[in-house]
Image (cartoon, rainbow, N blue to C red; front, side, top):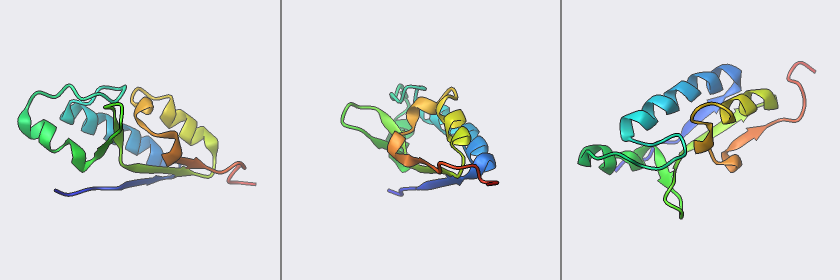
Length: 99
């Protein structure tokens, strides 16, 4: 089994990655709140390539979300699939990148 760690950096990286996780989640039968509803055995078998299963049965993307500005991370977290991401994996600076 392969494990993939996804690193997304900056506003552009986080915006593109938001769509990426939406597509991957739908492909593997993961709901926006992180639960697996997939029925296909191959779909369910390979869900752990991109996701880690938490103790409560939710699937969390194996991703590090980084940006100097909190707005980009806030936008990601408020997107349709933003509830998937662990707050521990969303890292942002406290100051404007232009300052």
